[in-house]
Image (tube, rainbow, N blue to C red; front, side, top):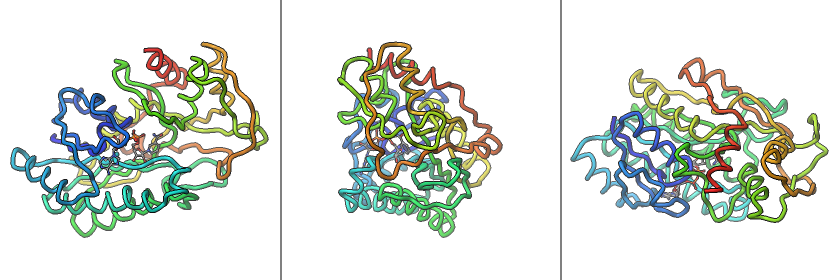
Length: 323
Ligand SMILES: NC(=O)c1ccc[n+]([C@@H]2O[C@H](COP(=O)([O-])OP(=O)(O)OC[C@H]3O[C@@H](n4cnc5c(N)ncnc54)[C@H](O)[C@@H]3O)[C@@H](O)[C@H]2O)c1
């Protein structure tokens, strides 16, 4: 298939491009390189510099590509993703994340592209009561980032009804790890994810890390999260694309491992490699005690199962950062 990957120079997008190329698809990446890196794009993928919020620019790229061969599907990764920043700058987040999706859908409709695979997030669930999230649970985001993703999900569903499109919406839980080639991984100036922060502390790239609260109602008092290796996640996108294109269907799927690990368990796992210097600070506003995916739907409908354990996720991040 010919696939357009918008945001394909970023962390998850670049890993998905690697999986698509491994599975023999033709890949065209569009990215404004605001957080992504040009050299993270697989050498066999074609690259266009472009901004998803700019209709004329995106439409021109689609015109050029469609003249060569129409796209079978579009994958969308092009979002701003830092929760505290979204609280400070909600208008930037609505512009990039929601207006960007509107422009992308308008361009897709203009060029008759019928299939969209969209990156959403567990943040759409907000603070679920029992900590285990199913796709049809209530959605109640507690920050602008989650709201922009939920608004995009809804827009995609309405537009797919009106323009006869198929969608695959993936709600990711905590994504971590690096590609086995170690060519790509999570490479950002400001890291906000627990696994790379813990690994950086073990590698003495940072002096100390904080655990935010150890008085939650969990086995060891620290927050419990569901971790998924970025290459497992990327493989799910290939399955999702085949499902909507070949079966002409749509769906919303959680992507996680259905297993929960506490922050302290992550720190202890990294400490097996090298000691981690941490302190326990106060809770952060808006952190639920537990957030775990129910992943049965992705397994039953797409045949998706995670292959890589928490140990593998951590090991790959360590190897990537050492390199
Ligand atoms: N990383 C996670 O743990 C996580 C969890 C849940 C959901 N997600 C979702 O996954 C997607 C990808 O996240 P990521 O971690 O790879 O982030 P990232 O910042 O590494 O990647 C985003 C990519 O999109 C590009 N981009 C951003 N705005 C753009 C625009 N206006 N036009 C063109 N390109 C633009 C960036 O340059 C970057 O290459 C996002 O939609 C995010 O909401 C990520």
